[in-house]
Image 1 (cartoon, rainbow, N blue to C red):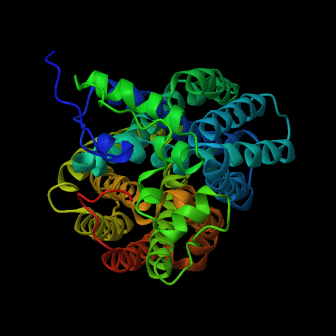
Image 2 (cartoon, rainbow, N blue to C red):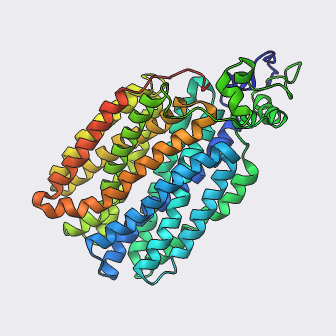
Image 3 (cartoon, rainbow, N blue to C red):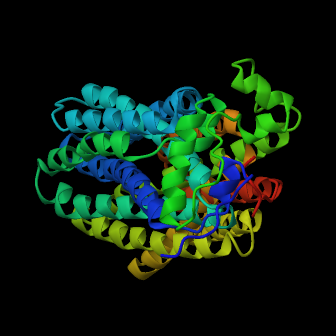
Length: 457
């Protein structure tokens, strides 16, 4: 590989922004993506466990709703705390810790013999799951080259489909095959605990985070391998002891943050409007996504399909997530973040309305696949937008707080489903509510700033 000229005079963030996508980026994306997929596998797997336990333990609709919702309670708290911790002790450390927590708790869930014990452990699982997602997307966004940053974050989010498909496979071929199948399925969910070791020792820490903490020599040592992977020579003068780019420019906020003084708030006048819009999108998309996909296997069983058949339908519907991510990854750097997110949310609203009217097997699969395509494409765009909206010293806090607020909706949704179904409106009313939530999210998404191609700083 030919050695390219050094980027003398550029800050570390600028040097990262202008790199091509290299194998080093690929390894970082792959490592983060595996953690992301394991997260999705756990969230998806509980939908199949709920359906199986509903038959074995004779659970009521409220019982099943609480199994899902208590996990999301943990996720709401975990997302908020995880973002705060990521801005204080680092993205990598929090990422590894969250994998360890929810991996061990998931494995322990396989041994429970009562609903109460399962609820306690699902809350602990939620703590880890909720903290991991915003931290991982923040870490990837801070390393990705500027010109394809949005696309790389959508690629990360695409691992969610891989994990959810894995959950559907486990649900179909493990959970649904025997009375103890749900225990074996949860035992498989211990994988993140082992993977946390790989994450802790194999991933770099965010350069922007290191600089914000005054660890400039470590930040330089982190940048160099990425430049070497791209065949770029080292700068003639290494800025090991220089302050970060923002400090060099003399901005008061960055100086205060580096010195450990009070940081800018996500509710400051400059950030308040985007925070409100982001929280609205997060709330509405969580309500509709988890309300639908956590309950689809159980809803299919209640419609008369066998447990195994309902799991097969869910597996087919889940596969449609992959092309949704692929299209979103393509469009997010062509159309931009805001148009892509808005379009996929509108598509999700239309698909939800269609699913509510589906009555035959063909319609259920077609409408479900369409909902899966648009909904998960919207998730990819949302995760790409979030980290771009905030400066480094509150980036983890901002994305984590939005995710935490959104998890309130994911708590409410599984509990609301039995109530909506019991009101007499059936699936038409239920998915009509989901369609309305997607529509509100689309309106809020259109008010977000368009930051395609801009530096994170």
